[in-house]
Amino acid sequence: MPDAHASTGPLAALRTWSPPSGTDVRAVVLILPGGRARSRQPASTRNLAYRRMVPIARSVHRATRAEGAATWLLRYRVRGWNEPDHDPVQDAWWALDGIRTRYPHAEVTLVGHSMGGRTALRVAEHESVRTVCALAPWIEDDEPYTQLAGRDVVIVHGTADHTTSPTASHRYALAAREVSERVCRFELPDGHAMVRRAPAWTELIRRTVVGAVTGTPDPGIARAMTAPDPDGLRAVVG
Image (tube, rainbow, N blue to C red; front, side, top):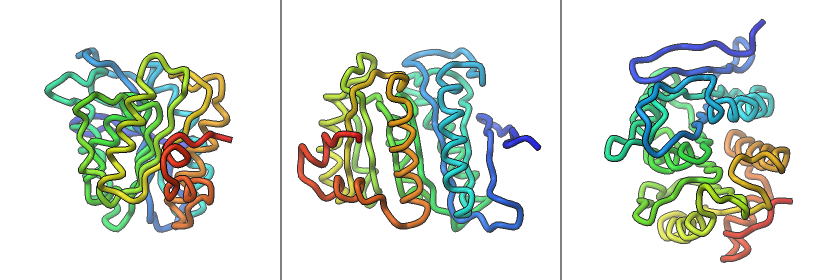
């Protein structure tokens, strides 16, 4: 039996993994891939940015399916952010509205990489979202953060990332703490593609998501959320 199926919507496409048959879905994890600053090229499941998130989605599903969580992996319409259209934000909002319609009481955890991390942070104000996990997020100087009020935010960045800025994500985490008491940021010696330390990235994502789904935060993440900078915003991934 296949582990997932695809469904197509008016703006984008979703690949979904469901909990065991007969289980009430009480949480959804929405996975958002990376992309490009500008591109009208149609997004594809063959794109590396999308393929990079498939094993993460599967890992999240294995860790949370018994807890009644579904996992959704979004494929955008096009590959670019495309200022001022913010195409992936439109697509993520469409997916979140779909979750709200299908599972009205489900709480959503967002997991996004690079452009997907920026997208996850942008759509955090959606009424279903409770937790955001942003991996090597693309952050600009004027990036808004007030939409993170009341949300749990976990940011992870590689110190050797030359594609998106670890310094920018640190500044953003500091700003986000002005509106949310539950913000932390982790660092690890890796680049943008999350390749060299892939198991460490995946394990931290798993800890974040399981804590969000079960309502029992991971102790290490909970400590970082209450620790001042640098311990809470430059925490080292073990």
